Length: 162
Image (cartoon, rainbow, N blue to C red; front, side, top):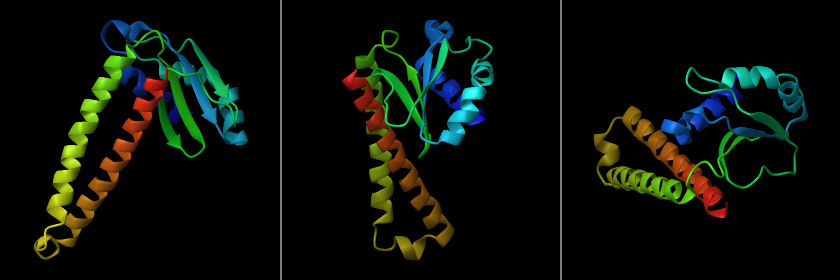
């Protein structure tokens, strides 16, 4: 329940800025686990109350999407784990062409940092000069940046199809 509410707040803060903060979006939760779906179904009001902030009203509606069904096009999505996704409907609220441009710019920046880090790690004397802890930390950064790029690609596809 807390993770879903937190995800809704994160998506709202990412996409609904400025004059759009007061917009009460429709939220879809794709749940692949019947046990989690039952909990969320019984706690819809709690999730809505936790998803509001001091500036933003609670979501207009919270819909659970059954396994095998998809939320409507034009949603921003966040994958919480393999069985749970949160989608906030932004169609008609956010200009998708501007959002795709923003996401592409962000992806370009991450790609640049990733290439620079990989180049550093591929130097012949890297393993000899860097402590193992630093090597592990930088490998973790590579994995995180690759995951972030994959998430950005998914978001861009979602907006391009809407």
